Length: 457
Image 1 (cartoon, rainbow, N blue to C red):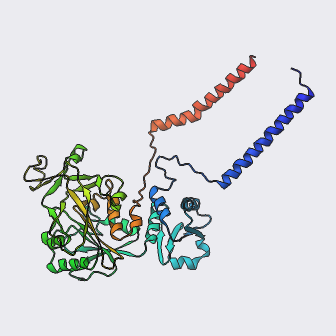
Image 2 (cartoon, one colour):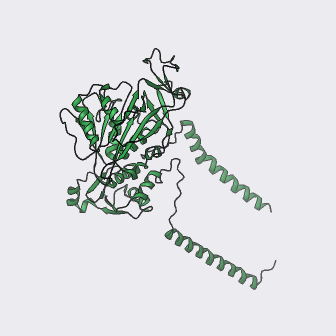
Image 3 (cartoon, rainbow, N blue to C red):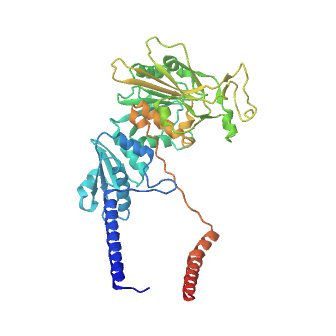
C-alpha cells in the first residue's frame, strides 16, 4: 500500500485527536477525583471504614463537638490521625477539628495536661475527654462520653459480698467498669453502713449479686430511694441472699427457687446445661441494641407476682426469655449429679422462663420516667463472661437505658477485629522463589517467543 501525503495528514490528524481526547479525559477524571471522594475498603474486617455503631452516633449528634489534635508536622503517624478524622467528618458537619503543634503551644499543652504526640481532646461545652490511642473505638467512645447531656453516676452497693468494680479476678466487674468509664459514666462503690445516704446525682443504683444478708435499715434505704423515683439495676443469682425479699415484694416480682437448665447449650458444645442461651429479646430498646445471642451462667428465673402495691403504676416487660426446652431445676446441683439432671414433672418449672424484667413508670411530675431492670444472672457482666457473645452489648444497653440515654442505647460497643496472614517457612520460600525467578523467566520466555515469531515472518 502506497502512503500518500493525504494519508499521512489523516494519520497525523488522528494522532492529534487521540492526544486531545486523552488530555480531556485526564482533566475530567482529575476534576471528578477532586470534587467526589469515593473510597472502597476491601480489607477482611473493613478496618478502614467506620463501623455501623460510629455512623449511628454521628447521625444522632445534635451539638457541635470540637476535637483538638496535638501533633507535630513531622510526627510519623500524623497522616494516620488525619485520615481517621476525615472519615468522621465525611459523615457529619458537627465535628470541628483543629491541629495544634505542641512545640509552639506549651501553655495550652500544660493547661490541658497533654501527655503524648497524637493525643486528641474531644470536647462539648464543659465536658471533655482525652483520646490517647489512635483507634476508632477510642474516638467513638470519647464522642459518646461528651454527647451525654449530664454526668451519669452509677452507684454500686458493696459490703455484702457483691461483685467488685475494681478487682481483676473472674468474679469481678472490672472489664465492664472500664468500658462504662470509657463512655462517660462515673462509677462509685458505696457501703450503706459507712455512708447511709445515696448521692442526689445518682443515675442508677446497682445491686450485683450480694451473698451476705443486708441489714433491714439498708433495705429500707434502697426502698426509700425507689419511692423517690430512683433507678435500679438488680443482678441476681440462684444463691443470692434472701434478705432482699422486701425489695422484690415492693417491685412485684419474685425469684423461682432453683437454677435454670438449658439443654440447647449442651447440643451446641458448651458441655454444661447451666449455660443459658438468650436469643428471644423483647421489643424494647435494650433488646434492639443486642445484636446476637447472650450467654448467661447459673441463672435464676423471675416471675411477676400478684402482690403489688396499689399505687405502684409499674409497667412490666419480660426482657429476656429462655429457650422453650429450658427448665428450672429445683434440686441442688453439683459436679457429681450435673450430667444426670433432667426435667422432673411436678417438681421443676418448665420453660420458656423469664430471666430478666424491665419495669418503668411515669413519675408524678410527668417529666421523667423511673426505670428498674432485674436480671436473673450477674455472671454475664463479670470478667469471666462479659467478652462472650453479646454480653457486653447487653450490659452497656442496660446502663444506658437506666441512665435515660435512649439515643445511645442502640449504639453497640465498637470492638476491634483483626486478621493476620501467617505463612510457613516453606510458603515464604515458594513465594520468594516465584517472584525472584519464576515470574522473570516467564516474562523473558514470552518476550523471546514473540521476537522469534516476528522474525520468522
